[in-house]
Image (cartoon, rainbow over all chains, first blue to last red; front, side, top):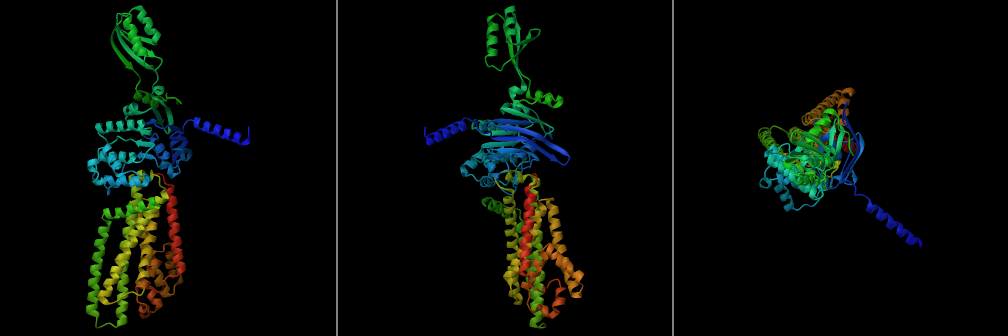
Length: 327
Length: 282
């Protein structure tokens, strides 16, 4: 084989190797530390968020959630550790060109109108966003009718809605929402949930910091729990919440039925109620079990899925330190 | 560069929307009206009793006095605008969303500074020019070097607002304004004290003025501006040494070295502000 052909083959091999690598995550940080005077706010936090992944950040007040977010965005200088944002170091401003951010402390120039605030952020992002698309962003958060009004006259909820529009207006790859529903009514919370789900559908990575655990449980693929500046636990909801359970109200259960229950998993009985711990999160396990029990002559009065809630798990981790970091 | 211009435009728009322009405009019109009335009364009542030289001297002193009023307004205006626009935005959280955009903090700071420079300098130049025209119309006096004098007045404003910008990166909005204006006034008083020291032949006291003019060049620039506004023969009435003790007359024009030092001073203080703001956690 000639030297040129060898070189070409090597190049092709290298290209295939690179193409075969998993895509770089939207965000990756390692060993982040931050001290304010004597207090350690963040102590060795590492996390990563893949493209199109929605990650929830949970933890008590003062756990360091907002400080971590600010370090990811280059707003706070870490004492140690590094952050890669969309493939660039977070210290490079260009890394933030496709990042949207709704701060926990949302305030916008009160002397500008909502449309002017949005236009300002589009200009600063350096990305062309047509005026019609900017109006759509305002309409998405229900502010289209107030586009020309000064922000100074807005309620807190309206300012937070504007903040959402500002965070979402540029062509995004990563969005950080720090307590996005703190000032919103229940309807607004549902809107935010829908927005986050639509971002995930569009392949946009989202980091959601929220005290509303139900909100996080509904929309997040993964959860990172911070406590006293450290990652107390992290993983998918299944990894964090463990195995599923199913509670069955059964009468007329024959011995074969009891054997069928035992085959499905560990069984606990309270009168006519049977709780079966299911080893895997398999969509077919419960329907198959119910079908077989009915086939064996048992009368099935109720089937209730049971799972430890994220709230219970979070409280357990924070109170007892029983979390244990999962990969 | 586009981010710098965007932030500069935003700062100017803030000055307009927050009614700072309106307040400054009203104050300026009041001062222009009062000085116009004063100069016309002076011309009417002293017209026959003063020699032409005495009239020019009086017009020079009065013009410098009124110009000092404008420089004070500009100092207060820019110092108290620099605080809220930088430290205020950092404290309130407005800067969080803006600085999470792909812009450098130094570009943000330069934009703010540039907006304030245009605003402050524009104000003193326009107000000062209007004042010169009023003096010409009422007492027929036209300063020997109005362009240079107005440029120095603008430079004085730039020096003070650069200091206010530096202060607003480290202390609260109100404190930065108060400290900047306080230092401005202190330097002016030190300049007057130095002038008195020079007229009395006391080198130690005279040095107070020289040192203060180096530490904060506002007073030095102000004296250079006065020199451009006043009639060249005015000092001969007092004698050069005694004229130096008078707060509204200037003994000599500024040297190129002093102007160069002023440029270096502004660059240094701005760089310090950029470093301080760049390292700040938001």
